[in-house]
Amino acid sequence: MKVTVFGSGYVGLVTGACLAEVGNEVVCIDIDQKKIDNLNKGIIPIYEPGLETLVKENQQDGRLRFTTNIAEAISHGTFQFIAVGTPPDEDGSADLQYVLAVAKSIAEHMNDYRIVVDKSTVPVGTADKVRAVMVEVQAKRGIDIEFDVVSNPEFLKEGSAINDFMKPDRIIVGTDNPRTGELLKALYAPFNRSHERVITMDIRSAELTKYAANAMLATKISFMNELANLAEMVGADIEQVRNGIGSDSRIGYSFIYPGCGYGGSCFPKDVKALERAAEQIGYTAELLNAVENVNHRQKQVLFNKIVRHYQGDLAGKTFALWGLAFKPKTDDMREAPSRVLLEALINAGAKVRAFDPEAMNEAKRIYGDKPGLVLVETAEEALKDANALCVVTEWKNFWSPDFELIKNTLKDAVIFDGRNLYQPSILKKLGITYYGIGRP
Ligand SMILES: NC(=O)c1ccc[n+]([C@@H]2O[C@H](COP(=O)([O-])OP(=O)(O)OC[C@H]3O[C@@H](n4cnc5c(N)ncnc54)[C@H](O)[C@@H]3O)[C@@H](O)[C@H]2O)c1
Image 1 (spheres, rainbow, N blue to C red):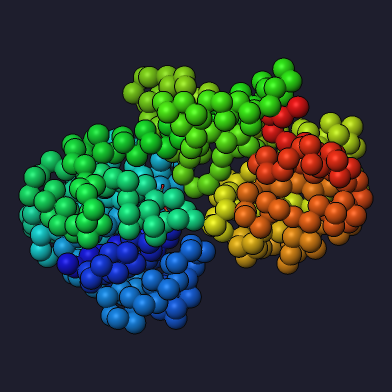
Image 2: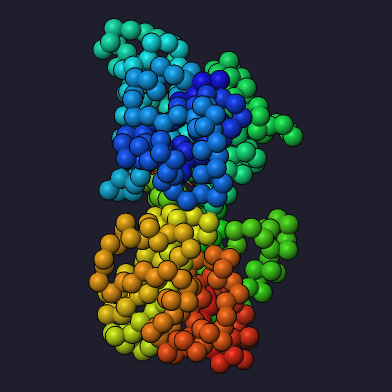
């Protein structure tokens, strides 16, 4: 089938590459000329396991092309996927300008039936707005070409995006036209071999399903962080509590890890956007508000522990920081807890030596030569001249470090562990002062 994908970021690139991999002819279009030039040279703009190989192989086989040419892209695909960003507006609501710009472009150039598939995360009612923009543009062109708008939210996780796309838990298709639903089912058939994963529903429910999923996951995290803070105050160990409640099948073990807050391009913005959307229709989303506030506070927890340990005197101290990406296996630093910590440390007069296995280029792009921040090439190098170590992202290579080396290199032999990677009792025996999240 012929597919066009607008936006060559995390979602667009993965969608394009995976749909090409199963045999479709895919054209990916982006307004970022440099990104497209790089992709045409085989340079992948993001780190995502398996993506580079998939993109290159499908490019070589001629099933995946990259362009900035709008007319060419729109004349190519019967399916026109929208996978552009929906960043937060000034007040936190989803900014739809990129989505609506794509809708406008499609209507300006279409000469044939098109299925506009919205994969971006958008508030309820966006499909109606997309449709309205397209009808208006067509009217100006003096044409009335049939099209459908489908909501097909994406649930991939950065770090395992290819696998998530190839073997999704579910494929949500929101449509008001059964025939279009069938066409989407046919497009997704290769990902449904073991069992049917497509769940068809009305458009508004599909739009809300994406926000509901992210809000639920963010709620689980904030709930555990709230409990972790309580555990600390009452002398309980949140890791034992986690095991205790995870064993209840109604609760389960996933997404109940306490830590230094959630980040990334989705949870923070989607919780906020849902909250604002509720507000706009006169409903106060108390729970979502609390989830967001708890997370905001949690991002300060490591810094507060550091301040307490050093009795407020951070000037002239140096901190090794392991992990810049908002989670392992990605280079994405959007809303990452590492940023809150490193900026707070530097504002307090400390220096930071930071390392991440994949996000160094992203950190350079964001911070440039920020005074007080040194980006280093290895985890060990971060420890040099540092007073203490802060672990912010749970990359596998940080799980079993050489504690003797850490102890002998750090000036103060203190670890602030924002992901509860280490055993407090073992570190105590080694003579390392340890601070975790929600542990006595
Ligand atoms: N990143 C994730 O893990 C994830 C997962 C599920 C859903 N989503 C949602 O998917 C959407 C995209 O997220 P992302 O992380 O891929 O964003 P991204 O910022 O990585 O990529 C968006 C791309 O769209 C391009 N773009 C903007 N306007 C355009 C236009 N008019 N035509 C063509 N390209 C245009 C940008 O240049 C950019 O390359 C968002 O709504 C996000 O909430 C993201």
